Structure formats: C-alpha cells, structure tokens
Image 1 (tube, rainbow, N blue to C red):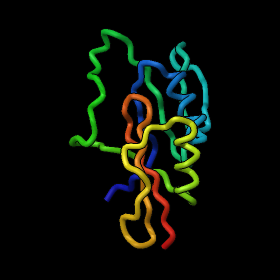
Image 2 (image 1 turned 90 degrees about the vertical axis):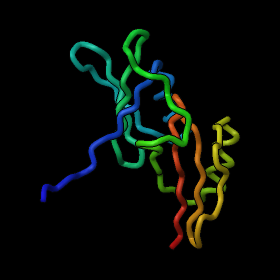
Image 3 (image 1 turned 60 degrees about the vertical axis):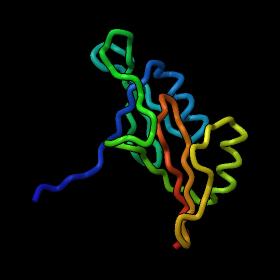
Image 4 (image 1 turned 180 degrees about the horizontal axis):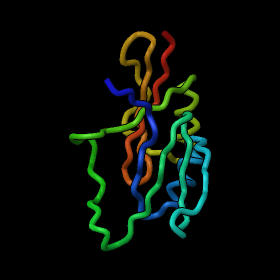
Length: 128
C-alpha cells in the first residue's frame, strides 16, 4: 500500500491578512509570507502543521462558509496542556467558544472555538 504523510490544510478567506493575524494572536501561529506566481502568499504553521491561506474574491464562485456541524471535513484539532487556563486567555482575547471546556472521558478535556470564516477548531488536553 502507498505511504501517506500529512502535508497541509487549506483555508479560503476573503481577508488573508486578518485571518493570519487572528491565528497568530489567538493560537500563536507562525506566519510565513512569500510570493507565488507574482502574487503574495501567506502560509502558517500551527502545532507543527502547515495551514495555507487562499484569497477569495467576489465573483470567484466560492460558496459561503457552512454552519457547523455539517457533512465533510468538520474541524481540526490542536493538542494543548492546561486547557482551562488557555480557554480563559482566549476568552479574554474575545475568541468565540462553540463548546466550553468539558471532560469527554477520563483524562481528556476538550473545547471548540470558532476561527475566521467559521472554521471550527478543537482544543484537546489529554492527560492519559
């Protein structure tokens, strides 16, 4: 069987800079700026993984973001340590929570936040 390794997640956004700034401020993303085919490109690294930001312009034919939950890719998860303190910090920054920190099973606490364009992000704190 072929071997597959993770490469990236791609987020389409009408405001690449605002989206990058949100992820940098709220989640500590590392922002990488470059040029691609003569156009500015913004990528991020979050939790060691690549997240690419693609600009959306009026008339591109791109649908509006869906409301969660929906079929297909639903969210991405980030592992954290100390979820309650992290949640308090994010709330102080104005981050919208769609699910407050809760214990889903012994040793695992999760919460969900909403990023730009309604992107659902799960934070997981696993102690076992």
